[in-house]
Image (cartoon, rainbow, N blue to C red; front, side):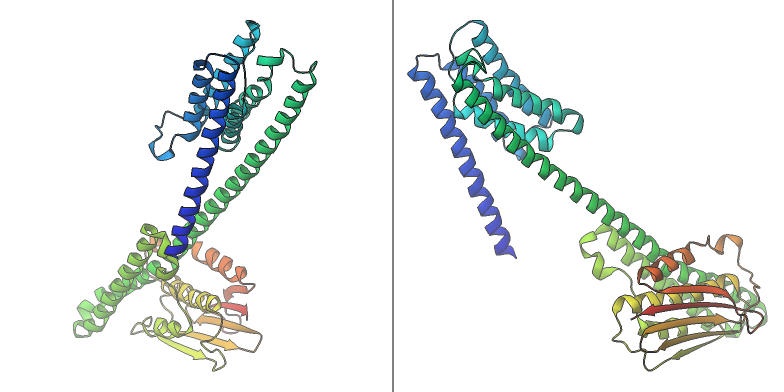
Length: 391
């Protein structure tokens, strides 16, 4: 990879060096033409110097005030003034390939890099300066056959260069939009991670803290397992936050560092969820193997995680929670049900705003699956979350 990058950099350097050499050689031809006809060299030299400076000034050393519109407009105006002076004084002035090449380069810069409100004006200046150069010698653009030929060739070259620049500008715009969309999706994914992981652990801390307060007076000797659960949940919450912040600080490693889950992680999730008053049972179909697509396993993990978090928030009185993983050959089904009656002592601020189920539905449907949430009809009380993923 390093060798490839070096080769690309070397090839770009060679191409730039060849372009610079070609522009300088063509500019030297302009000066030779002026010298042959006995025309003062300083005038074309000034026009060429300004144009070459605008084109060849290295970007790394270019001052911020030398904007693309300034770089493309000033040399064109100087060229137009040179043409106007020669035309009004009725004195023949030579023009050559060097100045034309510089103006074409500036036309390319104007169309591709100038701000939208300046691009048309600067491109028109450069194209106008290019097409009017024959006036220095022929005094007219259409009565002389040679002048017509120069103008037609200039129109073709300006159209090709402008069209190429506009095409590359459109590609740059599409790339910018794609990058912005990708970053937005990444931010939404990180927000979902924060909700799914950190909110899950923090809710567990809150529930177990309330339990510890109730046990402090009646069963103080049984506090140690509850406090250990609080410590474990806080540690996991901090680890999840650290990984997510790491993604924000270094987007290049986000794919490897973002918290994820799989079917094996569901067992750990259920084992660490139950409180002394609750029983969590996991039924996993042997056909639901660990070789299922990773995105399906991660989505199933999030379904269970969000469902368990909602049990803590909205059904803290549930005594039994059941998690079922089934695979029938055509898809994976995930079911989380509880027998709660909606009794909870959590503060209203800890109930959540409903964003978890919204994000969960988006995650499931993005994989072509279906999500159903609602009361358990058979039991008469409790809640059930069912998701099915094709795989």
